[in-house]
Image (cartoon, rainbow, N blue to C red):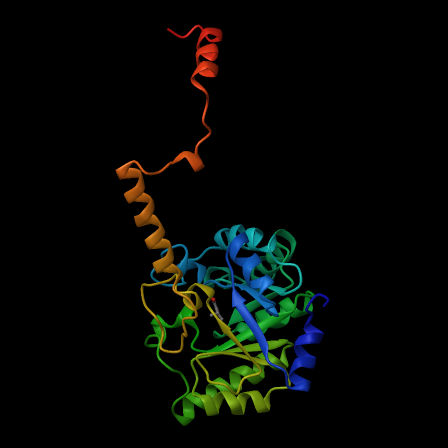
Length: 282
Ligand code: KIV
């Protein structure tokens, strides 16, 4: 199987197969999700909350994103590798945003970038597409601006809000986005957007009718414990595994059972005596 491209995303939509995307922020996790055969690895700005411990994604800087993307890049071969443009990367001029998108490509080897909806994002997305960088859009719940928009709940439950989200998705498609994340919208609204868009939709908390699904890997494997969104299914309990291992290590160190013979390089006393002499140790 060859490298996953924008054309593969589109043909998946046309042929009815489901796209799979997961997040990664470092080399070992990127290698693991790549080995699982996902279609895309996203260096999400969820980095800020699940790895860097911030209260939201808003403070994440370009430097932090590039640093983590460079590490994750080394673990990805086949999957499409996508960098998430953080809030701060989109606050300056359109030219600044294009420069930041280019950094993802040139410094971190990204093959596409993702942008969350905000006022004026169509101009930025168009300029980035025109610069030759594929852009994934993101509508519905947009965590970078969620606090200002009343929190992290489901979006598009009334007609006006639903119409806004449809219009945003169509606008981003119009300026050339190759795919669209739909976050936290009701299932039938996601189905309708998926029907209206030519490009594939990738749902998170938006039900089964999207062209693909994405989750934050730290949620999926149970490594991020601070809160769990309703839509997250945990496929593993890695936090418990890590905590149990650390507790066992601490117990064995304190009781003197680690390190044991199997984990020690033993030296014969005569050999050490010779070493002492050579080193003129008292
Ligand atoms: O930042 C992120 O991880 C994301 C995905 C959840 C889509 O935007």
